[in-house]
Length: 194
Image (cartoon, rainbow, N blue to C red):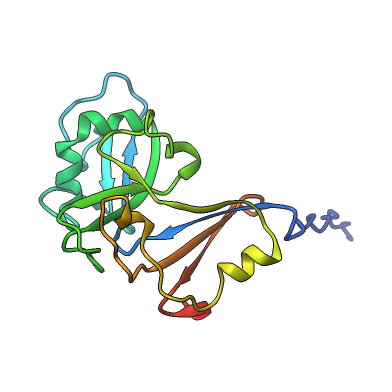
């Protein structure tokens, strides 16, 4: 017996230049994740192995102060009350600075949140957190793509400059295309290959 297949239309394709792009600095540290649950009666004790209302992760696993990633879980435990202001959900960022990857000549470590649309306002962001620096936010144009793709000359890290440090070996850029909802990375030291 023949069954007519369901027709599936090919999805519409967004024109490349009909979207916005947010370009931020790609900071060379280690990925950090803070998960906050939505139960108002949560246990204030920090315990990622249970159903507590704040868990901390690296890029690929949950971590604890006893099984840490460059001190990120310990820092989160110390700043838990302030971090709860992030609200329910998954909050991703880069844990960077002293002793991590490029180090940026920093005397301390910093957690910079990735979501610049939500956390760029100092008044609403937890005081213990920063946000990755926005280098451009607007329409995609051929000039913008040319300016921010391929090998680059040396530049100063906008993330380190915020802390008074002129660090001239930043990792690169991140491009977030709004309609596609996708990130792309452009490492400076690898050019367009990275």
